[in-house]
Amino acid sequence: MVAAVKVFGWSADQAGCGWYRMRMPLDELARRGHETHVAEEMPREWLDTCQVLIAQRICKPAASRTWQRIAQHPARPLMVVELDDDLWSVPPSSRVAYEWFSKPEVQENLRQNIRVADLVTVSTEPLADVVREFNPNVHVVPNAVPAGMLAMRPSERLDDRVVIGWGGSSTHVMDFADIGPKIVEYIAGRPDVLWHTVSGPRQLMMQHMRWLRRLPSEQWRALDWCEDIWDYYCAIGTFDISTAPLVPHVFNRSKSPIKALEAAARGVPMVASDVGPYSEFVRHGETGLLVKHAHEWPRALRTLVLDPGMREEMGAAARLQAREHTIERRGDEWEKVLLSQLSIRGGSVTATAPPPQTGGQETGEQQQDVQEHRCAVPELEAGQAWTCPEPGCGRQYGEQARIAPQYDPETHDVIDVAELLRDLAAAFVEGGHAFTPGVPPRETQAALYRIGGQVQRAAAAFGHLRIAMPRRG
Image 1 (tube, rainbow, N blue to C red):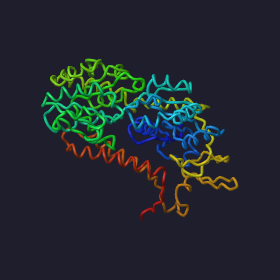
Image 2: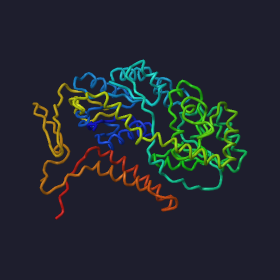
Image 3: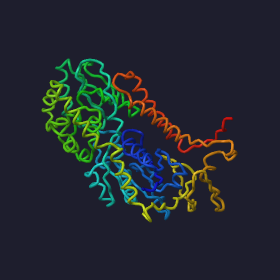
Image 4: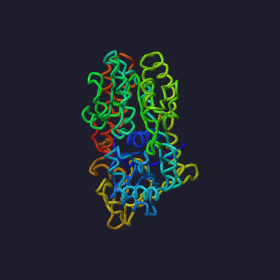
């Protein structure tokens, strides 16, 4: 049996990368018995006691200084840098990302932080080749989707038109430069076809992709970006055909086929560029169609629009393919990568000593200096507490550090608020998965998914807060 370890994920965002590369993998590790926490702020207790510290694309100045100080400490945790993009090759067309990641100091921070890490996790082999220049210990852990996507019932249709869809951010502007006008040209001539985007407001999209202005408004449904990932999964389930344009570019070479995997999990056939990740993932003629040149896109779309039987067969095959790429099936890859780097003695993981104190939470631009003293926290059983005896310290760990000390264990129960909220969130999501078509209404299922995601975010905000509640009677 694998010994449990304590893993903290220092997330860079709560968007797609934060979900696929931090939140979902660590939630799966927690399901396997490990103690995990993901946040954009690093609580002092977790920095002091975690055995594994994973930092997502760490490159901000203050965060980098903290990372470097932790690296110098002899009792540091296992330090992991997580990357999902080739951040040294962001194209100028992605204006906001380019303005930040093209800065020499930001690129140097990335390089230096990777160099001092014990290992780096990435999503694709081409990205691993880029990163190995700075650290040879790079492990590829491919992206996965939650198995719950496969249990979601088909989304409710709003009309009888064939829906061609795309979901993504403005970072894909260059991918649509030649292909976008061809898509519009085809859709504009087919009143029985609807273009559905999950990317942002209509006006904002037209600023980034001017070719969209040529599309009749009644043939374009623009949905704002979904704050809750399950709302996004519901939205792409309304597609009859999903699209993934991609141009040959050094930045795209390191991308993963996540868009095709998302569509596959919802049983939607994919039309994608025969480039990079999609060339390997999409099975041409079986789970979707691969397109080599921009002028071939209308023909590929027309093939699927006119053949609902083909769409159904490809969607079913894609769903079967997605079953092999769920986090529940592939979570062991994260577990093996992280645990293999820790010392194994007598069949159990030997915990590293606690890392240095910081005097507060580690966050964005408010990092604290790492002090020389560290608390030699012993292994604590459930319900135990420990106070550091070092002069001038007095830090508390365990139960008494998490709840007010003025409670009577004979008359009070200790409740872990975050754990309670996580269980509640899981119950909402499982409730959504359990629905069969037509029972109950689609709106109720979507509401359960949405509430589950919101409660999950609330659990992250509470961290490991515990309260003492008086027993009834």
